[in-house]
Image (cartoon, rainbow, N blue to C red):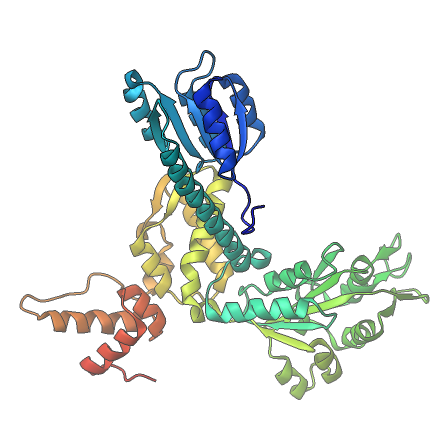
Length: 459
């Protein structure tokens, strides 16, 4: 590290031994660079293949591997490497070709040391800036894709914050929301952010099991506990010991099982079906439901004590129609995912097709969107982009018309602008942020235009 805490730049010099080369190496070392000097291209090639120089200064002509080849290999390893190639007056044409290939500069002997310093400073600064942007993008991707979740909307940013905060504790979490909104992904993200991440994450869908076997699935059973129980079997509590147990659709549990579940959550103790030995485990509980448990408690179909024990921390996952700004990102993620899985080369979704998807209500939420994209990729073109015609007919029919607005001859620009704003607001259900994005204007400008044209008054 240098005095200003920036890493010392590493320069690979591939030039034959001579007085000018020694002068160059001494100059670079005096300027604070770490210099690796080799006298021929083969050794330079080996260094590039194993090291990571920030800059390359190489002879265009070499007896074994010339500068153009070194440049090509160096850029394969580091696309932003600052490369300077050196040659004679007869090699200017080759020097121009080198710069087309990505070299920062071509110098004719004798070398201009001051210019080399300027080129190195510019090239290495650019390289570090690109690295910082890449790191920022990586952190943003990690943020937006926490636990496999790819979202940018403000409501999901609040959920990310809740996940990070609750993951540090042992508190039970109740995740609520419509079917297909991503409750399971939130549960997995909590586990992945917690200190239990190296231990099991065990799921059970309480609504998918017949009432008679829910208890056995949760707590296990002993041999002979019921007809067909030929051997003893561990339940989900056993399997999740030291980890996380995710109880999906916990609102569908029968009342008799709710009592035993409450005990298991409170004390970590339970008995297997048909057994008398009390077992104890350390399990973190995360539950999810698409039902209104408070109403069920009032109606007497759900135990209040279990409800409050599950709802130590509550996270509400919004439906996709309330987070429409997430749709473009989700569409992009799913399109590329299914393109890879199906061996096709799709670049994305055409703007007009995305408009239809943005306007649709998505009653099945993210799950419906994901299934829709998978079907479009499987049945659509092998390359290029997905078009409106690739969208399932029932979605195209239900989505509001988003194109083909009629502008009659003689309409003023103001009248046309009013129609565009009014129809866009209808399409996005008066979500002004989304409307402003689609129209390519600022939110404050949209509010001003609404007032100007006497459209729906601002809230």
